[in-house]
Image 1: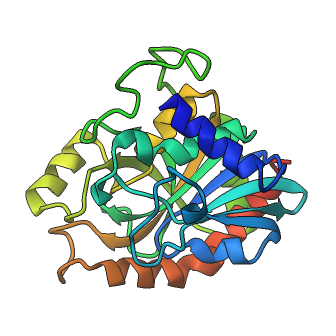
Image 2 (image 1 turned 90 degrees about the vertical axis):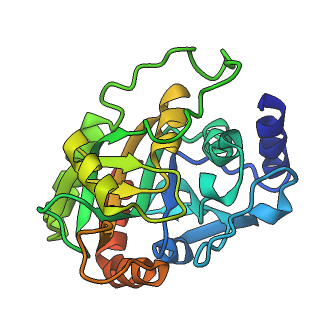
Length: 271
């Protein structure tokens, strides 16, 4: 694992010496922000030997290095998912790579299904905690001591100061930012009504197929983490119509202007 990660970092360093402070992962339907920043260089995942390539419609699959305000950022315009058939070590490889490139903060975004009655499609939800028990831990296997300790704490995995920053910027942007707990499943099928009821009983407010494992690895490597879910649909059994990926993208794209405004203003304060 270590050799593969470091090989990807070396390949990127042969193309750019840009050092980001913030790593931003853009979820389904949310990738347009990467096209609107001050770009220094972009690198397609397929250009990097050994790097996992996203196969999901709507995910461009590239790193974009540049600036949001004065803050140097690296943006993942499209992520890879466990359900695509990759090993979990490959799913989180991009997060490890961005950390080794210099990123200190990981800003996670995703499109998620709403479970809580307080949520509706089109809402933005600040992540306050997560449940990752339904996917394999990305830390299984030999520990690389240089990257982090064997048994890292997941207490307040979503940084308290960054949460406050996002709340403040949401008010400035007139965004009604909800808050809640995110639960990750493996996918790719959407959850059954019975599963949704179970997730709600466990305390989850929203459910998706990414994010939690990336947060675990970032925490393992000493990064500060924040996250926002775009509630693109109500989870299985709580909506009147069957779920579809097109619906997810459509709602995420509709909310994109507010989302981009909030992310931009927040990251500008992280410089």
